[in-house]
Length: 368
Ligand SMILES: Nc1ncnc2c1ncn2[C@@H]1O[C@H](COP(=O)(O)OP(=O)(O)O)[C@@H](O)[C@H]1O
Ligand SMILES: [Mg+2]
Image 1 (tube, rainbow, N blue to C red):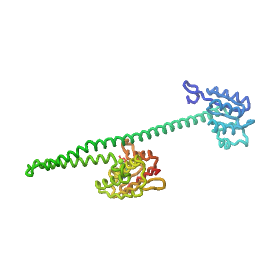
Image 2 (image 1 turned 45 degrees about the vertical axis):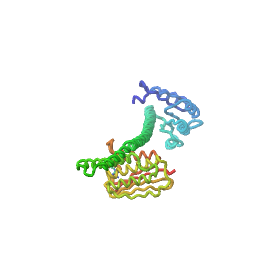
Image 3 (image 1 turned 120 degrees about the vertical axis):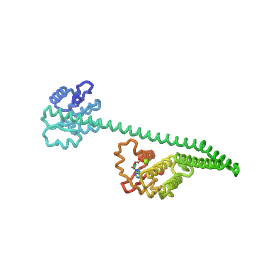
Image 4 (image 1 turned 90 degrees about the vertical axis):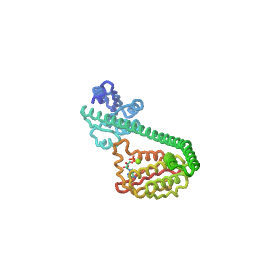
């Protein structure tokens, strides 16, 4: 409680405003406040108290209830409303000023006359303590919000950097590696033609093997490029890119995919399409990695002024609550990044899943 007295070194002195129209009370309370190391201002009416509050910041106001002019209840309400100052109201034993009325008017606490100094001090300290806890909480909440929004901004930036990097690598691969592979392929085919018919079996085998390796490598590079840049999205749009991705997914996994993409006619801006594509791609990666699904459906449909992307599988599903309690910092980036992408698009994101009941990923973004 050292902090509460405000007298120990480094602690701010609490400032109390005491309001009572009877002089003797003002003197007594000022003395008590001085004894516990609080600074005490005093006023003889509600009007005077409000004038002081306009000029001077105060931690807590203590006011008598029955005063000529503005009464203590009105004053407490005004102090709260205009200056966010909490009050303790002192009451006599009158019917008029019930405790309910006092609290309902916005006072923090009340004390009935006659009171012991001790009770007075305890209540005062409690009100101050509550106020400080609230201020601490508000500060912590603000700090949390700030760091959240900084993290969000960082995530958005990270996505941009990632997308740029992908584009640059894909271009390099296409312009340099891809071109050379094509040229090599041409050279080898020519060479094959130049070789005499009666060529040694060994040479022919090496030749055929080289052509096969080259074919495989070309295929690999194409694959890598496709993963780096959504194929055809710039020219043909999101639906085409998803169709292409779906075909590759089915070919590779044997999982049946049903598509419903025809409703997507008015194209969204390319960055938005790219984000939606990445989300679908991540969803398919998850299906491949976790779902053990037999079939998948993907749809892209306008719903009001929104576009809804839904990817549903009939796989093993999972308990979505597990995501929140996972302590592994490396786990679950897929869903997190999907969510962040959607957040960046000002959209809505939902994952519906239950063990044994498949998984549905729903994304909604504005169409305009
Ligand atoms: N389609 C799905 N079917 C079954 N489980 C899934 C599916 N998608 C996600 N999950 C579960 O949610 C977890 C988190 O997914 P994600 O965030 O993509 O991280 P990661 O794939 O790296 O584990 C997965 O580990 C998996 O348990
Ligand atoms: Mg994943």
